[in-house]
Image 1 (cartoon, helix red, strand yellow):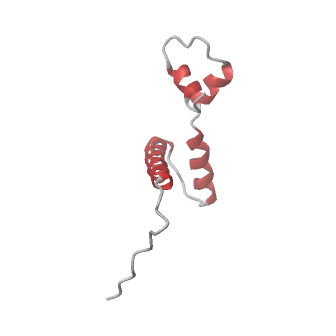
Image 2 (cartoon, one colour):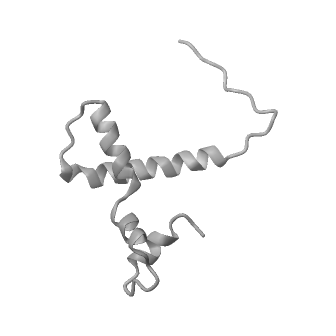
Image 3 (cartoon, one colour):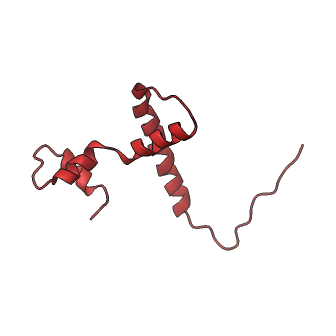
Length: 85
């Protein structure tokens, strides 16, 4: 089962076969916990109205990071040289 399958089922209109736990999981985005913890750790005030935007940017960043992580480099790949002016 895909990790997002409970969320997908919970968001369907019929909701058939959705457990209470799955409904709770769908209602709370795991990124919210990360955003709250990061804001608290960094002592950043975060207006609740900004949270959806922060979540959207963080989600996009994590998706891009996953693409980079999944890209296999050949063994012959070397880092680019460092140019100094």
